[in-house]
Image (cartoon, rainbow, N blue to C red; front, side, top):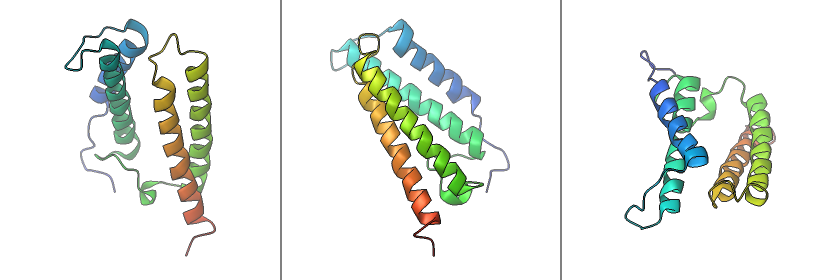
Length: 136
């Protein structure tokens, strides 16, 4: 299931951390083609999060790709429960960042975190159902 030569996960992790730290801490941006430095900062932040996800995927599954199919998981029901809890935690962080940290973070941070949390929860529920009540 894994590649003979696993892809490098360090480069996307380093670049992702740099981009995300710029979005949260330094806020260095330019107008871009849309003439909005804050929008450019949001795009840089989303790109940083995407690179961190790619890095996590490569480190965890030792292969290229983006979708963690259930046959790649060692223990899908247990992992799905953990992912459901993590999704709920991300939803809590989204609420907190959208309500209490909005003056410190870019405006759509809560919305983007809500999207990520909901996707995590939907995938976890799908795995729980497909290995539980809907199993063949």
